[in-house]
Image (cartoon, helix red, strand yellow):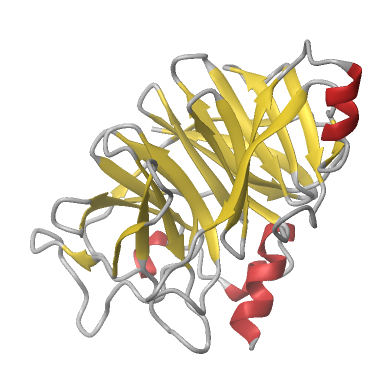
Length: 293
């Protein structure tokens, strides 16, 4: 089960040589190459790999998740840490390593590759008794945060597949995930869940729009989605394979545009701010975020 093992270790960059990082080798011919306009170190409490990234336009804050179930809120320049917590794995529903981060309705959330997710509310004025209760599910940050809700998504098509990406769409009022292929299912799919009851709304395999030039006998199967961002009516899917960002039109369920980038060896989280793509990657042992436009 080589593919599954890759999922568990992708964030640490152990399989960098397993991926083709050249955007030109993907299925799509007419890709739009992005220009890197900046790259910088992200200073966290330690060197745990960043696996999730999100940006909230209203609060002007970034949210970062790390592999070890940590959440950081940072300012819009990713220079200062505003908040921090570290979750346990085994309270109520089993979490595994965190692979994604998401803002939702004033709460901050993380998801593990087994589709279990949890959201926390900032509660800096809670009583000592409330903080002691929060210690059940928070190893760090229990003085300032409390659990909002925790659950697991249940899928049909993707029941035997893991996920590395997740985001909430204010436009559709739904959460989205994308799976990664494995030895059992060589293709990947996208699923959405209503924010009213967290139940499955749609689940589908994206196709390629007719306006794209597609290479003979090629399809989307070997793209490997490690991050996503819901922006307006579209979903942007980050693929470590072929260093690409795929623009998904949810109305047609088709990829309508493909962007390529270069210079990153372990791209695994995506956020959009001011029309620019922010991509997190572990480079030479350090957490980096590169900006492309």
